[in-house]
Length: 604
Image 1 (tube, rainbow, N blue to C red):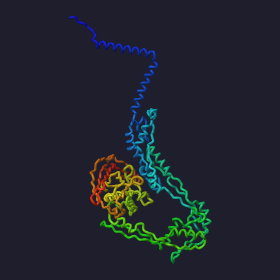
Image 2: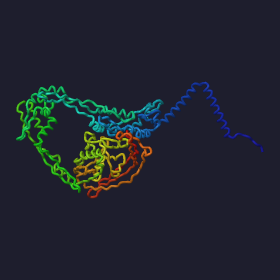
Image 3: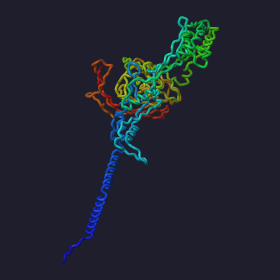
Image 4: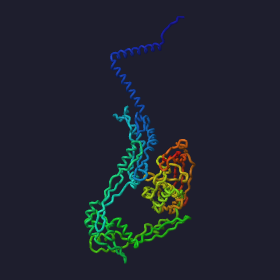
């Protein structure tokens, strides 16, 4: 047999392909030798472009190298990561505002109380935009060297800011004093005007925002602006000549058979400088609060003020209504007009005093028509009366709200009813939960007990709760999951009266017991369930590594321990039915309490 060696068709094709590639390489090599500089440039350009694209891919959707927000480095983080860092680190750091308002202690507020908040999402978007440049067609690129410390995006609610400033104004604002006249040894003397001051709202806002941008809470003085009096010293001096006529002789006030004589010296203290359209005719006037107060003092024997009907809650839950009475009081507008006329004319200086009927704001008929003859609900909580500052605040809150009428369809606000918690309004320093979840001294500590007691009265009356926030920390002596906290300008407790009838809030203190009653039968029944605690979380600082706080209220070297408490969450579900048993509504109150660290207080 003859053996033949021959190439297969596949082998031939492979050989041809190999020769073709070698040929292509030879041609490319020849081209490269002829165009060496052009080829090198193209190769470098391709490598640079590939590297640039790789860098853009790495930083796409992330903060660029060197980017920080208020000193917090966020380079390489995506938007969610940046926002989380801001919420966990920046927001707590800048939240507390400590103002030197001229008192013994700084006035401590939170950004939330002032209607100011850091916007983590918008700030994260700003951080991711740092170092990026716009290209045509909406494209963006990041270039090295674009790292920067980005200012956080801060939102200011103008209405809430104005409301939050009320607590600051209560301590800082000083009203201007008008110039006035004084009679001394027969001579008319001008008491000079005094300028006042008020909070520079815009200036304070700028200071707070600058501190936030620097990554810290604002601590410092309150900027102020001067306030000019309505009546200047020059105005008073120009009216001094006219005072000779006004104060030339006494004025006799006659009521029936009795006479009251206003001496020139007394009239000088009652007169004020006129600045209105009739200033030329009446350069001085008795139309002012000083004159009104003095006239009521002088004629207290003649006046019988009206008496409102009162609604009392008996120990057995029944209601007792004390009848209202009408009264007779000075007709002050007429009396002041006649005093002005008598003093300015220089003629007859006798004025006949008349009384006018005065009616109660709440009559017995009103109480009956409002359906306030039955108890809606009441709730009692207890406190230690030996803690006098805290007890004072609770009693003050109870007094301010007591007797408030909530009309049909009206939403009641506890903050609006109590007003700012300041020393000049009768509140005292007592422990409060500060922004860092540590108990510190603050004006109004203890009023949250009133909020909690009112919330429970509303809860069992079956009324809709519009706004309620639990305490940030678990407090064991309050009903589980049924506590409420308030903070002026920030957190409120509000409920709506949807019954179609008026409801009166009564509140009183008996020893160490605070009771809040809602007068006005709602005809509703309430059932509820309370879950077990869940989402239990341990404190970040235990007994072995407590938070150390240096406390000026403790003596030097004194150490006081505060036990930590686990964080937890609880849910309360309420069902409200009408008199027929039909379900009116259901609602749920979720209370999430943060862990309370172990604290070691050290006196200094």
